[in-house]
Image (cartoon, rainbow, N blue to C red):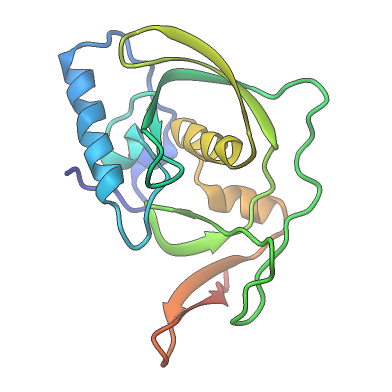
Length: 188
């Protein structure tokens, strides 16, 4: 299992380099990233980008649910389809109770930090898989959110940048006196 870097770290804020050749070293890196993502707990991860484990390479993997197979993306190029707009609303969390339909975005490199990010509901991605085969695919919903989050990592962008640009609130998760996780507004 690989060590996941925590922000701030230079590689997390630097644009990743393209993978020149998909060789055994890259395949082993993907295998190690997969093991790391599968074993990520508290929180569980749904995606992992190579910069998060200290490699400035354009690779990320996703696993949106425990039973979903890992998907691999090498040298991705993201495109927003014509007519697709950023989500119009981003709900926030208040107090101890979560509002229905609220989704907080987190990151394995930002322990206990959460926020609401308005993302595009659809994205197109051109990429290579671990065999070098090229693909173009449309992703929607939660998959589109994960893709955008991981793609941001390859651009040296962490999600709090979007939270703040969109005028939303960052939260810190803490365990209260009853042992329950609650979210407190992070004062910046």
